[in-house]
Image 1 (cartoon, one colour):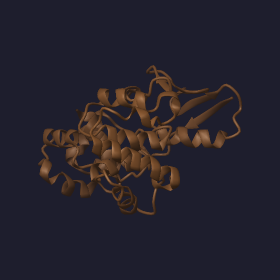
Image 2 (cartoon, rainbow, N blue to C red):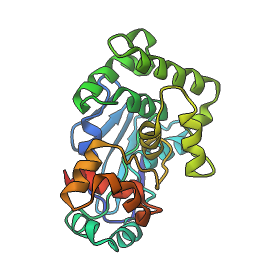
Image 3 (cartoon, rainbow, N blue to C red):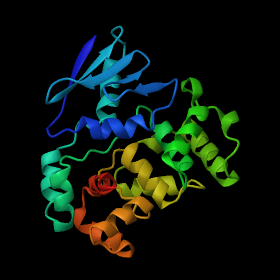
Length: 252
């Protein structure tokens, strides 16, 4: 079974593929730079304005697979409208000229993204990926693999997993961004940075903005923004602050 996943240009496959490849969970998903594979699903470029998703056999929930794929690769974004809005800011204009059409990479499973946001606090991408490989070996969350992290982080992950099991809507987009952030930060161990990161990648909130991120601050300094004033500066980037964040991260 083959399904075409259309999108609006521009779409920089190399950028989103590179991001996802470094975070792929071994044994669960793979990304060789050309194609993404998870189970019997394969997604790869297919011309200038579509991706191709193939499945070994027609699944009973094809619509669900399409929805997952579109969220993962941010295919419903309008890069032209987003770019025009953000380019009104001269500080972002050069970044967007060099790398047009920023997209916010998602993930196949919202819980995986949310757990990774907690795991990734104050450690490298490589270290976080190593831990994720242990936690989701076999495609399911393995509580026994939590050892080796600070207790507060372990407790936060367990709280999140229990909450998600009881109420999956915790990782669904709320009526407003503030509502989404409020629900997430109500969980012990999830602060504003983690909540905004989850909102960006798992909840698909286009205006989420983890302003305390060290990478964002470093990128801000490079284009002439006082990092202590980054949040205030980002007000003019609404309602696409998540895309501004991606543009800043890519500039590094």
